[in-house]
Length: 291
Image (cartoon, rainbow, N blue to C red; front, side, top):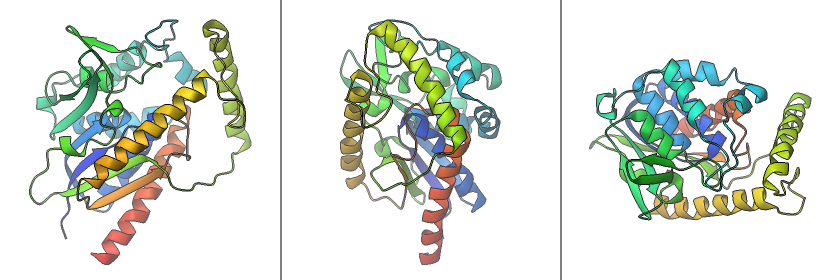
């Protein structure tokens, strides 16, 4: 049975932490990841994995609570986006120094969207963190990343599952992780999770006063600016992802429900990673049984 893997990691906000769990599950079963391509959070996790220091990154993000996450979000009132994105990148650089992509342990590609030209950009050389910062620039949330004369936003806008950008060798299995899957998900929140969610809502309300936008607390509330943007982006990602995956022969597709966690649940990294590992284990069990 083939064990080498060309890995593709989708966009998906905080749910992208599930990619860490998938990678852990693959390695535990003896699969060797030989290349990786990602969009948005998929680009971030894939890039850190390619440095060989994903375990260190995992240990850090699983200790972050809601207040620590908020401290890393350098909020600003700007028509370009609410988060500058400098604090989080700087913190990551302190733990894992920047490298040139061409010097990484395995081939790596990150996709971003050149908002001026309206075209997809592929980062496969140069600064790793420039590539990550460009790819994670969620529209209306993160400010676009300026590099030279170009402005970049989230890679998921044009290519949320960048299958066509992974450097795959002849005998590599094509493994795709989609954390925006429209599959059923049921979960009861613990008291601790409800407490965290309430704390986040309070912080969002403070921001709301500044931007004069309506941010509903529950899905049943009227759709305001925040939820409208989220729902629109989610629908766009789903449609583009479906078209992309239909065009390729995928050996292993690992799905994580879009309803499992919210786009901005970054303080739930530990649980999201577990969700990714569980999804991967289920898919791998079927694959190995039939292989």
